[in-house]
Image (cartoon, rainbow, N blue to C red):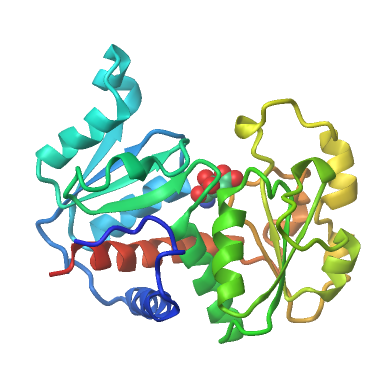
Length: 290
Ligand code: NCD
């Protein structure tokens, strides 16, 4: 059994092999290769893309799927997170996919739960399958990572997508910058002015403002945000010829991204969503191998 908790604990070789396997899934391989396995998706936080692309990946692999609903479960009677996960493990399902708002929730499960766990996002910390789908999208576009310039723009401080991506992208030799409002700054990273990033980067990765994780309301208004950091068509026209736009979604139209930029020629947003199914197929195969 193999957990997928974060990418920090995966070697570059392992990550490249997951991407290769995802690419094979994209070409139509491995359908029904996990026939008969049962997977439980335990989402303790709202999710559309991650939850249902795991669901789609599981179906393509031939798994049987249990989608847990916390609001109609015994959690309403006060049952804890640990006891809920332990219950699914006792059903002897073959893998458990978990999303939680608690950073490193999996630490309390390690050594106690034998079922492989796939982390579908923990608090502000990690989102390994999101990073894999982002990497796959970048690799399909540029065919390498080394030396690519990326700016991750927006609410860096509260974003597990940013934290997960920056670590692995730097390890892959990418030139990683951050940009965005002062109130969302994470001091440990290197920053670039947004207008400069637009002109110089190969990849602009936008983030949603993570309101649900804020202790206080955002200081900057939505209009000011759009004016200062929103990717508008005017800014897109200043990007390098082969540069691309990414966003993990959900996006807020006309806040971090203008309406007409969402599906513009440089946008790879729906390609990312497409790739999410294939990297999750690869990740599920890795966890249930053998
Ligand atoms: C992200 C998440 O939940 O971390 N979404 C996703 O998984 N595609 C980003 C977000 O919610 O802003």
